[in-house]
Image (cartoon, rainbow, N blue to C red; front, side, top):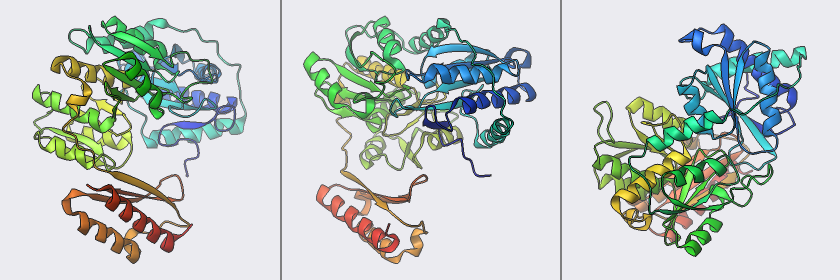
Length: 456
């Protein structure tokens, strides 16, 4: 059947409207509870009766969590409620606590009106697609039957967040004394956790956007709006700035000069450090980093200069993680700042990423301007073209000709990527090369030809 509820990152939509209305949220909990009780589980006597629930700071989070908990209670499944926490925090606790699964109530970087439900298995990873499809059938069956119980009362267990931040602190040998940080927490999950963690480790922290009111999450702040962080870093004469998104599963940085440090630069800085310390290899594999097709050619070349291979996957942290597991890689990520340090985590973790970056700065006694100097960022242009239908590129001779012309012009000093959106009627054209004028010319030519052949 066509999946109508679960997308690439759980269930997401406008809170209070289908599929995130009260009845559906409770049906999700009930379906999850039914699966937990009926499925064979390792250490069943410990895991079968408990689920962890966490949420970000949206005003709809508490009632969504209460509805999911009510659904779980129908099957006698107990709930531990972390309250406001991060998505990677739920993943860590689900894996390392006595929980059969974890549930995160969040819509990540979306505005406050949206929310979402992410399901995480005991291993700390998102449930596989086939499991979500089975749950989806049960959810629809429950909705057809119309059963609904009162929302379950929930009390926050503050010890859960402490266990998670204790884990993060333990990943850093030594401390961060002497480091001045500006932290933009997007009025989201990291608003209390990140500043307290950094200060606990000895850093001086200047907080911005750390006062959530239920409606200001991601509002002109955080990792999607770095201009305020840039200004604060310069004004405070800070060593570094870090910006999180709403659920803190990713982080971007600002150097002392105000330069933006994206996920590509983070992969270079941390990857080189790990290689120097003999920690970038696993299971006998050569040093490698997993990135996506959108990662800049400058990153690939800078890594190559240090003897580090870079493997590209389609866009999406799901594909990055799959390739990491396949190759035994310990580091991978995306330009967006979603970086996975698999030694410590099963998913991208913004606070963990920040600690790894601060560790490199401390040990090198250098700022991010110096540490990223080797990464020559090639001009890159992305053009979206609205289309009427999707066809194989090889069946579009004019488009193929324009792509070949660009590739021949750039040789090995540039890249061309044309792909179709998985969720919208769009063709996405990415061109990258050493000169901006040439990049823009070829991007426009390819996009125009797609418009002519598939026009929307």
